[in-house]
Length: 250
Image (spheres, rainbow, N blue to C red):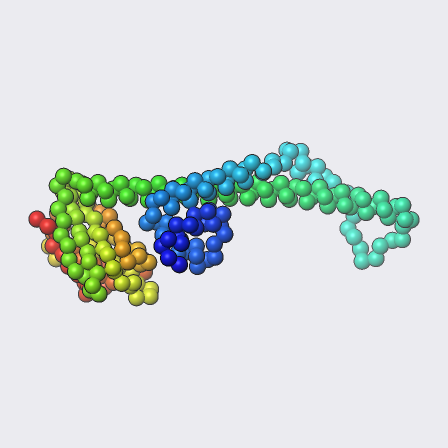
């Protein structure tokens, strides 16, 4: 699946029409593509509104009526008593009526539950879009800061990395291109270096070779940064030799 194909999956994702594999691939794409995140949120909200438009709210007395009528239904035995034809026909009609009433109640509950679920999914998508927009804004604020300073380096495997720091924003952004996938069960972790002491600065997305990462936490006087390979979820302290160490630009 190419990057161009991913941009066409917003509708299928909003309607939960993707396979599990396609959904995981698109979720990673969604975290990095603001237009797709916004479009997905809008489509999910529309789907939720359509669900709410056809939902049915049972009358308050319906539950009471169903429960009261259920108590009048005799437990069926394996052998039916022999009844006259007219009586059997009337009895079947009563049973069908009770089943129809129960089915209507179940259908109403299902439609209402589906609408609530769709609404929740729309809210989740909207929240993801807002979070992506906030991350983009924070990254842009660092890169565009008047005091922003930048330093580039070559990483193992031919990847290139650039770190930008802003004392005014008290933040750093790491931009990488051509990063190889980490080993299975591993993730790249970023670190602030404070006079030889490493302080976690967050994780990179293991499914993306090109990305911009707002390093987690304040600069707080850090003199540089490092990158290590850590178990999925990250580590409190580096457990491997750094792939790269960079001094922040003066």
